[in-house]
Length: 92
Image (cartoon, rainbow, N blue to C red; front, side, top):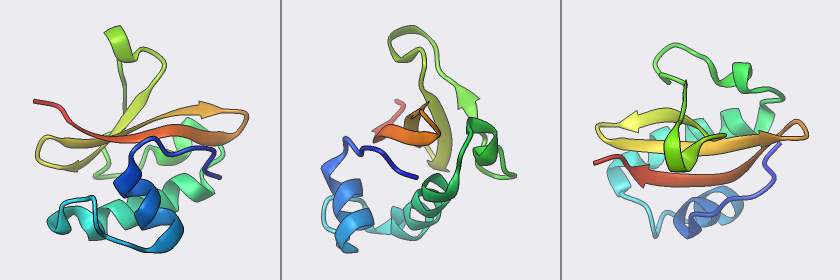
């Protein structure tokens, strides 16, 4: 279940199926990731081939990331069995 989405473009894509606010080349992959996050109950549910799940450090300690494409990552926390503070970032 998804608790909260920080990125406005991701929120529009998930809640309203609107693609404005995210790169068009990432839309298909982002839909897949959001669907997985919506059904995930634990962080390990996101540990699937190709997603490259990893825990973040430093300023983003407590967050996990999965690969979207190139430098793009979806980051999130897991709180009370749901993904929260979901964001889309460019690592570099």
